[in-house]
Amino acid sequence: MSGLLALLDDVAAIAKVAAASVDDVIGQATKAGAKAAGAVIDDAAVTPKYVQGFSADRELPIVWRIALGSIRNKLVILLPAALALSAFAPFLIAPLLMLGGAYLCFEGAEKLLHAFRKRDPHPDATGNPAHLEEAKVQGAIKTDFILSAEIMTIALAAIDAPSIWSQAAVLALVAVAITAMVYGAVALIVKADDVGLAMAARGRLALTRGLGRGIVAGMPTFLLGLTWVGTAAMLWVGGSIIVHGLEELGFAALGHQIHGWAVVLGHLVPAGMKDATEWIATAAMDGLLGVIIGFVLIPVATYAVAPLMQRVSGK
Image (cartoon, rainbow, N blue to C red; front, side):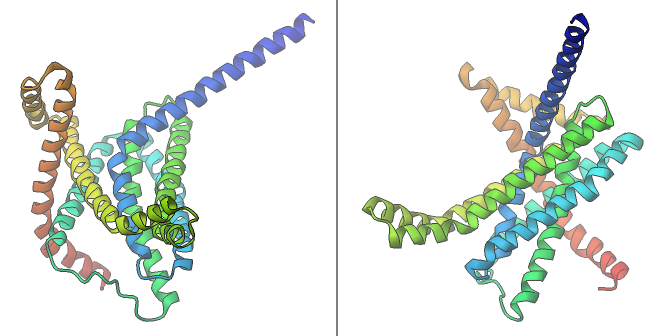
Protein backbone atom coordinates (compact mmCIF):
# COMPACT_ATOMS: atom_id res chain seq x y z
CA MET A 1 0.00 0.00 0.00
CA SER A 2 2.82 2.36 0.91
CA GLY A 3 4.46 1.54 -2.46
CA LEU A 4 1.25 2.45 -4.29
CA LEU A 5 1.00 5.72 -2.38
CA ALA A 6 4.62 6.52 -3.21
CA LEU A 7 3.94 5.77 -6.88
CA LEU A 8 0.90 8.05 -6.82
CA ASP A 9 3.01 10.77 -5.22
CA ASP A 10 5.56 10.40 -8.00
CA VAL A 11 2.85 10.53 -10.66
CA ALA A 12 1.38 13.63 -9.04
CA ALA A 13 4.81 15.27 -8.94
CA ILE A 14 5.41 14.45 -12.61
CA ALA A 15 1.97 15.77 -13.52
CA LYS A 16 2.69 18.99 -11.60
CA VAL A 17 5.98 19.45 -13.45
CA ALA A 18 4.29 18.71 -16.77
CA ALA A 19 1.51 21.17 -15.99
CA ALA A 20 4.06 23.81 -15.02
CA SER A 21 5.92 23.16 -18.27
CA VAL A 22 2.70 23.50 -20.29
CA ASP A 23 1.85 26.72 -18.46
CA ASP A 24 5.36 28.02 -19.13
CA VAL A 25 5.13 27.14 -22.83
CA ILE A 26 1.75 28.88 -23.10
CA GLY A 27 3.05 31.90 -21.20
CA GLN A 28 6.16 32.13 -23.36
CA ALA A 29 4.09 31.71 -26.52
CA THR A 30 1.73 34.50 -25.42
CA LYS A 31 4.67 36.79 -24.70
CA ALA A 32 6.36 35.96 -28.00
CA GLY A 33 3.13 36.38 -29.96
CA ALA A 34 2.56 39.81 -28.39
CA LYS A 35 6.05 40.88 -29.47
CA ALA A 36 5.21 39.91 -33.05
CA ALA A 37 1.92 41.82 -33.04
CA GLY A 38 2.97 44.36 -35.67
CA ALA A 39 3.89 41.77 -38.25
CA VAL A 40 0.74 39.79 -37.40
CA ILE A 41 -1.49 42.82 -37.96
CA ASP A 42 0.18 43.48 -41.28
CA ASP A 43 -0.23 39.84 -42.30
CA ALA A 44 -3.97 40.10 -41.65
CA ALA A 45 -4.13 43.41 -43.50
CA VAL A 46 -2.20 42.21 -46.56
CA THR A 47 -3.87 38.86 -47.26
CA PRO A 48 -7.47 39.92 -48.18
CA LYS A 49 -6.22 41.61 -51.37
CA TYR A 50 -5.24 38.20 -52.78
CA VAL A 51 -8.88 37.08 -53.06
CA GLN A 52 -10.12 40.25 -54.75
CA GLY A 53 -11.49 39.63 -58.23
CA PHE A 54 -12.50 36.00 -57.62
CA SER A 55 -16.00 34.57 -57.31
CA ALA A 56 -17.43 34.23 -53.82
CA ASP A 57 -17.24 30.43 -53.89
CA ARG A 58 -13.44 30.56 -54.41
CA GLU A 59 -12.64 33.01 -51.61
CA LEU A 60 -12.49 30.57 -48.68
CA PRO A 61 -10.64 27.85 -50.65
CA ILE A 62 -8.01 30.43 -51.61
CA VAL A 63 -7.65 31.58 -47.98
CA TRP A 64 -7.35 27.93 -46.91
CA ARG A 65 -4.60 27.24 -49.46
CA ILE A 66 -2.67 30.32 -48.33
CA ALA A 67 -3.10 29.30 -44.67
CA LEU A 68 -1.70 25.81 -45.41
CA GLY A 69 1.25 27.39 -47.19
CA SER A 70 1.78 29.69 -44.21
CA ILE A 71 1.83 26.89 -41.64
CA ARG A 72 4.20 24.94 -43.89
CA ASN A 73 6.47 27.98 -44.10
CA LYS A 74 6.55 28.29 -40.31
CA LEU A 75 6.78 24.66 -39.18
CA VAL A 76 8.75 22.98 -41.96
CA ILE A 77 11.23 25.70 -42.93
CA LEU A 78 11.37 28.54 -40.42
CA LEU A 79 11.08 26.65 -37.12
CA PRO A 80 14.12 24.38 -37.77
CA ALA A 81 16.04 27.39 -39.10
CA ALA A 82 15.21 29.41 -35.97
CA LEU A 83 16.27 26.57 -33.64
CA ALA A 84 19.55 26.13 -35.55
CA LEU A 85 20.15 29.86 -35.31
CA SER A 86 19.50 29.85 -31.56
CA ALA A 87 21.77 26.83 -30.99
CA PHE A 88 24.73 27.64 -33.25
CA ALA A 89 24.66 31.37 -34.06
CA PRO A 90 22.68 33.32 -31.46
CA PHE A 91 24.81 36.40 -32.19
CA LEU A 92 23.06 36.63 -35.57
CA ILE A 93 19.58 37.04 -34.05
CA ALA A 94 19.87 40.81 -33.46
CA PRO A 95 21.31 41.61 -36.94
CA LEU A 96 18.69 39.42 -38.62
CA LEU A 97 15.96 41.08 -36.59
CA MET A 98 17.27 44.47 -37.70
CA LEU A 99 17.29 43.28 -41.31
CA GLY A 100 13.68 42.17 -40.92
CA GLY A 101 12.85 45.48 -39.22
CA ALA A 102 14.38 47.36 -42.14
CA TYR A 103 12.23 45.30 -44.51
CA LEU A 104 9.12 46.21 -42.51
CA CYS A 105 10.11 49.89 -42.70
CA PHE A 106 10.63 49.59 -46.46
CA GLU A 107 7.26 47.88 -46.96
CA GLY A 108 5.47 50.43 -44.78
CA ALA A 109 7.05 53.40 -46.56
CA GLU A 110 6.27 51.87 -49.95
CA LYS A 111 2.61 51.49 -48.92
CA LEU A 112 2.55 55.15 -47.88
CA LEU A 113 4.01 56.10 -51.25
CA HIS A 114 1.49 53.99 -53.15
CA ALA A 115 -1.39 55.39 -51.08
CA PHE A 116 -0.84 58.79 -52.67
CA ARG A 117 -0.57 57.48 -56.21
CA LYS A 118 -3.52 56.95 -58.53
CA ARG A 119 -4.16 53.24 -58.86
CA ASP A 120 -6.66 51.10 -60.74
CA PRO A 121 -9.16 49.97 -58.07
CA HIS A 122 -10.11 46.91 -60.11
CA PRO A 123 -7.66 43.99 -59.90
CA ASP A 124 -6.60 42.24 -63.07
CA ALA A 125 -8.81 39.19 -63.35
CA THR A 126 -8.21 38.42 -67.01
CA GLY A 127 -6.87 35.14 -68.34
CA ASN A 128 -7.41 31.60 -67.13
CA PRO A 129 -9.05 31.76 -63.66
CA ALA A 130 -7.23 28.64 -62.47
CA HIS A 131 -3.84 30.03 -63.53
CA LEU A 132 -4.67 33.40 -62.00
CA GLU A 133 -5.68 31.74 -58.73
CA GLU A 134 -2.49 29.69 -58.66
CA ALA A 135 -0.38 32.79 -59.28
CA LYS A 136 -2.20 34.72 -56.55
CA VAL A 137 -1.85 31.89 -54.02
CA GLN A 138 1.86 31.43 -54.72
CA GLY A 139 2.42 35.18 -54.49
CA ALA A 140 0.59 35.29 -51.16
CA ILE A 141 2.62 32.37 -49.79
CA LYS A 142 5.86 34.10 -50.80
CA THR A 143 4.78 37.30 -49.08
CA ASP A 144 3.70 35.28 -46.05
CA PHE A 145 7.14 33.63 -45.91
CA ILE A 146 8.80 37.00 -45.38
CA LEU A 147 6.28 38.08 -42.74
CA SER A 148 6.40 34.64 -41.08
CA ALA A 149 10.20 34.80 -40.94
CA GLU A 150 9.90 38.12 -39.14
CA ILE A 151 7.26 36.73 -36.76
CA MET A 152 9.32 33.64 -35.93
CA THR A 153 12.53 35.64 -35.42
CA ILE A 154 10.76 38.13 -33.13
CA ALA A 155 9.20 35.24 -31.22
CA LEU A 156 12.58 33.50 -30.90
CA ALA A 157 14.15 36.65 -29.49
CA ALA A 158 11.35 36.94 -26.91
CA ILE A 159 11.60 33.33 -25.69
CA ASP A 160 13.34 32.61 -22.39
CA ALA A 161 13.11 28.80 -22.50
CA PRO A 162 15.63 26.51 -20.75
CA SER A 163 16.04 23.96 -23.54
CA ILE A 164 15.82 23.62 -27.30
CA TRP A 165 12.73 21.41 -26.89
CA SER A 166 10.96 24.12 -24.93
CA GLN A 167 11.92 26.63 -27.60
CA ALA A 168 10.58 24.30 -30.28
CA ALA A 169 7.29 23.86 -28.39
CA VAL A 170 6.86 27.61 -27.91
CA LEU A 171 7.69 28.41 -31.54
CA ALA A 172 5.35 25.68 -32.81
CA LEU A 173 2.55 26.99 -30.59
CA VAL A 174 3.18 30.55 -31.77
CA ALA A 175 3.20 29.39 -35.41
CA VAL A 176 -0.07 27.49 -35.17
CA ALA A 177 -1.86 30.09 -33.02
CA ILE A 178 -0.84 33.06 -35.14
CA THR A 179 -1.68 31.28 -38.40
CA ALA A 180 -5.11 30.28 -37.08
CA MET A 181 -5.75 33.79 -35.78
CA VAL A 182 -4.60 35.60 -38.92
CA TYR A 183 -6.32 33.42 -41.50
CA GLY A 184 -9.42 32.96 -39.36
CA ALA A 185 -9.69 36.74 -39.26
CA VAL A 186 -9.01 36.96 -43.01
CA ALA A 187 -11.78 34.43 -43.71
CA LEU A 188 -14.22 36.48 -41.65
CA ILE A 189 -13.17 39.68 -43.38
CA VAL A 190 -13.49 38.39 -46.95
CA LYS A 191 -16.91 36.84 -46.27
CA ALA A 192 -18.31 39.71 -44.21
CA ASP A 193 -19.87 41.43 -47.23
CA ASP A 194 -21.58 38.17 -48.29
CA VAL A 195 -22.95 37.76 -44.77
CA GLY A 196 -24.13 41.36 -44.84
CA LEU A 197 -25.87 40.86 -48.19
CA ALA A 198 -27.61 37.73 -46.89
CA MET A 199 -28.76 39.55 -43.76
CA ALA A 200 -30.01 42.52 -45.80
CA ALA A 201 -31.94 40.31 -48.24
CA ARG A 202 -33.28 37.58 -45.93
CA GLY A 203 -33.41 39.08 -42.47
CA ARG A 204 -36.77 38.72 -40.77
CA LEU A 205 -36.36 41.84 -38.66
CA ALA A 206 -35.81 45.37 -39.88
CA LEU A 207 -32.91 45.62 -37.43
CA THR A 208 -31.23 42.55 -39.01
CA ARG A 209 -31.70 43.92 -42.53
CA GLY A 210 -30.39 47.31 -41.48
CA LEU A 211 -27.36 45.71 -39.82
CA GLY A 212 -26.67 43.75 -43.01
CA ARG A 213 -26.79 46.91 -45.13
CA GLY A 214 -24.49 48.60 -42.62
CA ILE A 215 -21.95 45.76 -42.90
CA VAL A 216 -21.96 45.95 -46.70
CA ALA A 217 -21.65 49.73 -46.70
CA GLY A 218 -18.96 49.75 -44.01
CA MET A 219 -16.62 47.05 -45.35
CA PRO A 220 -14.69 49.28 -47.81
CA THR A 221 -13.99 51.78 -45.01
CA PHE A 222 -13.08 48.94 -42.64
CA LEU A 223 -10.65 47.42 -45.15
CA LEU A 224 -9.08 50.81 -45.79
CA GLY A 225 -8.72 51.37 -42.04
CA LEU A 226 -7.20 47.89 -41.62
CA THR A 227 -4.66 48.71 -44.32
CA TRP A 228 -3.65 51.90 -42.52
CA VAL A 229 -3.43 50.11 -39.18
CA GLY A 230 -1.24 47.43 -40.76
CA THR A 231 1.02 50.07 -42.32
CA ALA A 232 1.36 51.96 -39.04
CA ALA A 233 2.12 48.71 -37.22
CA MET A 234 4.82 47.80 -39.75
CA LEU A 235 6.55 51.16 -39.34
CA TRP A 236 6.27 51.12 -35.54
CA VAL A 237 7.53 47.56 -35.17
CA GLY A 238 10.24 48.02 -37.80
CA GLY A 239 11.57 51.18 -36.15
CA SER A 240 11.36 49.62 -32.69
CA ILE A 241 13.26 46.53 -33.80
CA ILE A 242 16.06 48.64 -35.24
CA VAL A 243 16.32 50.76 -32.07
CA HIS A 244 16.47 47.68 -29.83
CA GLY A 245 18.87 45.96 -32.23
CA LEU A 246 21.26 48.89 -32.01
CA GLU A 247 21.07 48.66 -28.22
CA GLU A 248 21.90 44.94 -28.39
CA LEU A 249 24.93 45.76 -30.54
CA GLY A 250 26.17 48.40 -28.10
CA PHE A 251 24.77 51.53 -29.79
CA ALA A 252 22.22 52.64 -27.21
CA ALA A 253 22.32 56.42 -27.76
CA LEU A 254 19.28 56.54 -30.05
CA GLY A 255 17.17 54.38 -27.74
CA HIS A 256 18.14 56.48 -24.72
CA GLN A 257 17.28 59.68 -26.58
CA ILE A 258 13.84 58.39 -27.57
CA HIS A 259 13.21 57.23 -24.00
CA GLY A 260 14.32 60.62 -22.65
CA TRP A 261 11.97 62.52 -24.95
CA ALA A 262 9.10 60.19 -24.03
CA VAL A 263 9.76 60.78 -20.30
CA VAL A 264 9.73 64.56 -20.86
CA LEU A 265 6.35 64.30 -22.60
CA GLY A 266 5.09 62.05 -19.82
CA HIS A 267 5.78 64.79 -17.26
CA LEU A 268 3.57 67.20 -19.21
CA VAL A 269 0.36 65.26 -18.57
CA PRO A 270 -1.53 64.25 -15.40
CA ALA A 271 0.05 61.42 -13.38
CA GLY A 272 -2.65 58.94 -14.38
CA MET A 273 -1.81 59.40 -18.07
CA LYS A 274 1.99 59.36 -17.69
CA ASP A 275 2.66 55.71 -18.61
CA ALA A 276 0.25 55.73 -21.56
CA THR A 277 1.71 59.00 -22.86
CA GLU A 278 5.27 57.68 -22.64
CA TRP A 279 4.27 54.49 -24.47
CA ILE A 280 2.44 56.40 -27.24
CA ALA A 281 5.32 58.86 -27.59
CA THR A 282 7.86 56.05 -27.85
CA ALA A 283 5.75 54.19 -30.42
CA ALA A 284 5.26 57.39 -32.44
CA MET A 285 8.99 58.13 -32.48
CA ASP A 286 9.79 54.53 -33.39
CA GLY A 287 7.23 54.80 -36.20
CA LEU A 288 8.70 58.10 -37.42
CA LEU A 289 12.13 56.48 -37.47
CA GLY A 290 10.57 53.62 -39.45
CA VAL A 291 9.19 56.09 -42.01
CA ILE A 292 12.60 57.77 -42.43
CA ILE A 293 14.43 54.44 -42.79
CA GLY A 294 11.79 53.14 -45.19
CA PHE A 295 11.97 56.13 -47.51
CA VAL A 296 15.77 55.95 -47.49
CA LEU A 297 15.57 52.27 -48.47
CA ILE A 298 13.10 52.74 -51.36
CA PRO A 299 15.70 54.13 -53.81
CA VAL A 300 18.27 51.62 -52.54
CA ALA A 301 15.87 48.76 -53.28
CA THR A 302 14.77 50.25 -56.61
CA TYR A 303 18.13 51.16 -58.09
CA ALA A 304 20.51 48.71 -56.40
CA VAL A 305 18.83 45.63 -54.91
CA ALA A 306 16.21 45.02 -57.64
CA PRO A 307 18.67 45.22 -60.59
CA LEU A 308 21.10 42.96 -58.74
CA MET A 309 18.36 40.39 -58.10
CA GLN A 310 17.31 40.57 -61.75
CA ARG A 311 20.85 39.86 -62.86
CA VAL A 312 21.20 36.94 -60.44
CA SER A 313 17.82 35.40 -61.28
CA GLY A 314 17.85 36.25 -64.97
CA LYS A 315 14.28 37.60 -64.69
